[in-house]
Structure formats: structure tokens, C-alpha cells
Image (cartoon, rainbow, N blue to C red; front, side, top):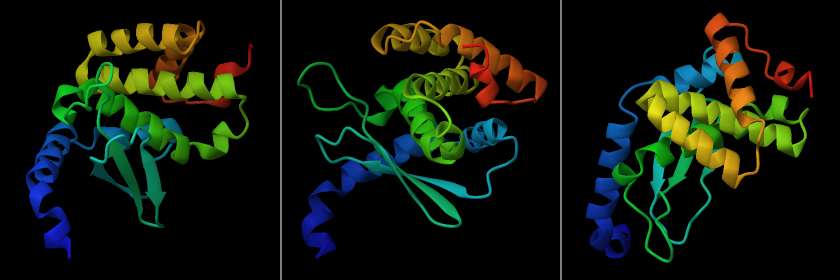
Amino acid sequence: IAAFFWADHAAAWQEAERDLQTIFRTNLLATFLGQLLGHPLEQDIVIVPNLLYPGRRSLVATTSKTYYLILCLPPAWGESSPWPFRDGVDWTLSEACRTLSEVILADTLAHLDENQRLLLLHAAATLFLEQAIGEPAALAYLVQTKKAQKLPQLPQVVDTLREQLRLKRVDLLGLFATE
């Protein structure tokens, strides 16, 4: 049955898998998420491509040993089909970080209002991009997200979280203590 349904699409799935292996060739995402938590992740991360269009929401399924991130393709402009992962590396990395952070930081996020949750998730994605591919990509994400999501406090939250990570004293709830 699998051969009948998937044989014509095997090349597309293999291409997506190769793209993701290249993008996530290091353990940087797990290390970064562990820094946010204050301790290394206890579960492995497995990233699975979702090539079904118009899938637009990435998902996480968990077991006691693994986070399975089912990652959608980067959206293209207008009505065009999504881009391959390799053509949207910054989107792929930020989407992976935000989506996994929603699950991994669920206990912390439960104490925040919607605006604070968005600020924390986008600040984390910004700093992960900074570590993964550099400051220009992080700055582009920051500027675009600040405007698109109407989050004028995002640069301040990013700076505060960056400092907490540098000092290895992360207090995610403390990011919003002065609001």
C-alpha cells in the first residue's frame, strides 16, 4: 500500500529529509532549548517534514523519550506553493524553535498572558537564529516580527533574554516583571 500511494512522491520526501538534515546538522536547537529551560533536554528531538499542502501549522507530538516536530514547508509569497526547506532556512529554524518552545516551555507559558507568550516565543526564536545563522538573520526576523505581530517590546525582551542566557541565569517569568 505504501508503495502504491507514496512511490511517486519518494523523491520529494527524500529531498525534504536531506534539506532538514543539512539545516539541523548540529545539536544547536536542543542545546538552545536546554539553555532556556536551565538544564539539558531529557528527550531527543526528531524533525519530520510535512509536505502536505496547504499545511501551515507545525506540530509537536511527544513521547517520554522524544519530541517529534512535524515541520511544515516555508510559506511562499501570495498563492504560490511553499518553498523547499533549503530556500527558507531562517523560517525553518525560527518555526522549529517557536513550535518546540511552545511545548517545552508550556509550564512557564501557562503563567503568561497571550502577549507575553508571543514575546517570549519570538524572543527565543530571534536569539536562536542569532546563534544558528548569525546576527543579520536574527535582526531581520526581529524587525519583521515586531511589525507583523505588533510587538513593540520585542527588542527589549530579546536584549533581556540575551543577557540572561549570557549570564546563565535564565528567569523567563522575570522577563516581564517590570511590565
